[in-house]
Length: 163
Figure (tube, rainbow, N blue to C red):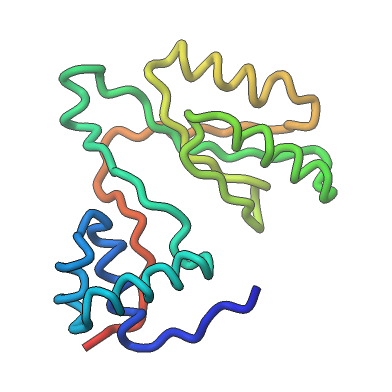
């Protein structure tokens, strides 16, 4: 699929939506200086083109901590013995099925993958590592870095400045 060319209005809509996807069509149209029907059509076109993958709620881990505890966040480096296409894809498929794995990046150079993992506690993290890494004979090395403080979190993609 060929991505659509993006004009200033499209970039403005994308910027607004990635900051707050809960904006009503009316408010979004006002901010983009277009009519609500035009806004609806443009957002649908951006979704259909795959530029907007999905809309989610970002939960406050600090607020949730009083109810469910802080949990553990780890950045995990994974190196595989074999890096052929099927081995890489098999690993990606396995981690994609785990809710605790929030992000997975195939990287180079260095390790083959970097994961961002969130677990309830250390026993939960241990169980995850045994399922994903220990049971896989192709995993050669696992190196985990545990977060002691989240200084920044976001998913906003930098777009050209829209005036």
